[in-house]
Image (tube, rainbow, N blue to C red):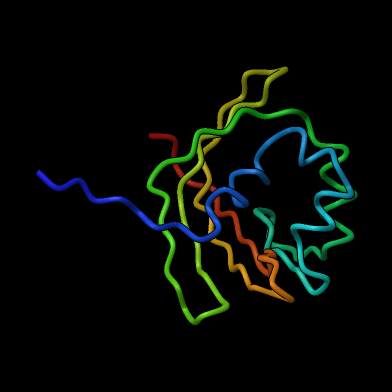
Length: 124
């Protein structure tokens, strides 16, 4: 039986953005997010790269479990990512579920996230 292997382009980078170490590192976030990065937030506002770097420093630590991860190559240098993430705030135990979409672009031979949207979903 032949086993299918997925060829993901940016999965490792996407998942790195969920790690506590990366979320607390302005230097690493600066490398992973493009200068023109923006996000549509769960509260219905928009954030820039600078906003996200500042906000993540103040967020409580979370555990993330990713499921249904997929990528769609839109062009040679652009990838659309979407997945579901089950989240748990470490300190309080509060659980949430988020539908995530991001767009990554290869800029000067380095993949960077240019867009992100997280939409609250029902916990399954």
